[in-house]
Length: 269
Image (cartoon, rainbow, N blue to C red; front, top):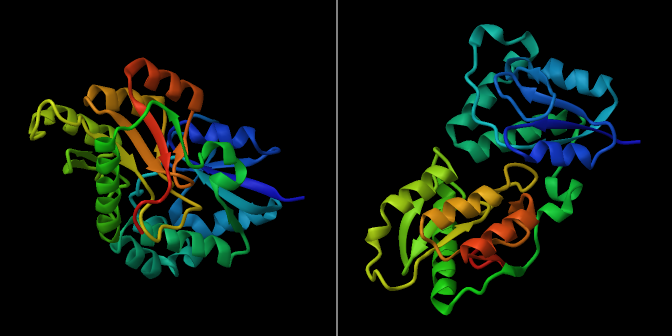
């Protein structure tokens, strides 16, 4: 029997993944507080931690929830993990995607397979379709433009979200995250060229070439409220590439706020 370990991050995803598994081990990076009981571990002692997972019969690992880059203590490294430091630091200097890919490689080199959230909880990753509302032709053009922008910025390892209105980029997700981006868009709504024209869209998608076993973009009911406060017409995302938490509540809030929710086919490669 396959035993699975969850590397739990912040947000509501980890409890949902845990509920779909049979007696998973749950761990979290020290200093983070996932909304689920978790045993902490330190990146500076990564190799002993991997040994522990194997000793517990774990053969599969799933990463669930948001995790920021931890601050590393050079004096805390054990001898075996210290041998990985140059490799880890090179990856971290290359951006979040490179750091995550290197981390996955290290797990796999120690005999642990990596499962995606879509593999464990496929219902959390919607396929193509409009969940509610109806994007106008203007909205659809803004979504296409948003997908083009994320395809172009992906190589720069920026965020996974963008706000576009009337063909113009009002805000791009960076390190502060989605809520900060939507707050910025709300405060600069007056930049729309035509005050009576298309209100704009919030679009999310994985970065081009991203390893989709980890760090998929995530949306939920809070995203709907934030998009409504920004005065947007709706939210769109790349089908099969974005996690939607609490779908029924997200749809309910979108209907109450008059927003569309569109899980659209990939629009840019």
